[in-house]
Image (cartoon, rainbow, N blue to C red):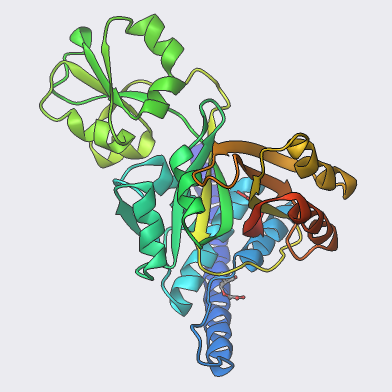
Length: 367
Ligand SMILES: C=C(O[C@@H]1C=C(C(=O)O)C=C[C@H]1O)C(=O)O
């Protein structure tokens, strides 16, 4: 009797779900047709220059709205992730977007690219950060994704250096929680692991765990975590440290999970492209500023931001490669380059700076 009631109740609920899915399906198709029309309008009004289909500022607004109006029971991020995928599919209908990322397949950077653009983007692995820059510069892809800073290990210097030689712009940022796992293959003898492969950043992020659990294993730094995962093939005495995607892509087992020393370990990635991005309402900007080696240079650099009440979110120093100045600062702050306050501050800085280069204004990461 109770089994019958359960069956009836479930059947009724499943009928309701089928009805709802039907409506969702129709609505998604209607949305996709609208996106196609957007593409038609863009084409009809084109002045002959290349049409820009992907609009980072609009996408950020759509995702923020999805989160703001969400009443549960799904979490805000979960809701936004669903909309992320719907938009990704709609954009692919307008124009398939091609994205280069720091590879090989299975890296955290690939995960960041998919988190930012959704799974309808066509992603291409590159073997080095400067290759990602070159691929975008050559026009082979429209966008690139590169890591820029990790909460445990700090800045990715290759990325900052690549910006010094490039005219590409930053069009977005994405932050990824990084979980590291100790991976083994089916041939690994787990009680005789004497070598552990990983990227140097990941080895550093798991230093204490390794000291505690594998104090005598040789730590071998390789080009990427995915490369580390690949190296395991046929080595019975080796393990790799890498993320979930690498484990899945290379068919490895998690022998120990979440072994990063800091529980809030996260990495920030930048989206690079050729187009400047319009304000989305909640934006960040990045600039490189070269100062002469004079007393008070750092004060001269920072004071205008304080005067105009602009929050700095990061200040990074790199050795300058030219003889004209000594310091180069990479500065991130809240605000868009079109904001009056930002323009006023940058104007004041430029009077004291040897050189100033705007790397881009872009929507603050939503997901
Ligand atoms: C539809 C547009 O084009 C693209 C697709 C979007 C969407 O599906 O909502 C949003 C921004 C663009 O990346 C648009 O510009 O509005």
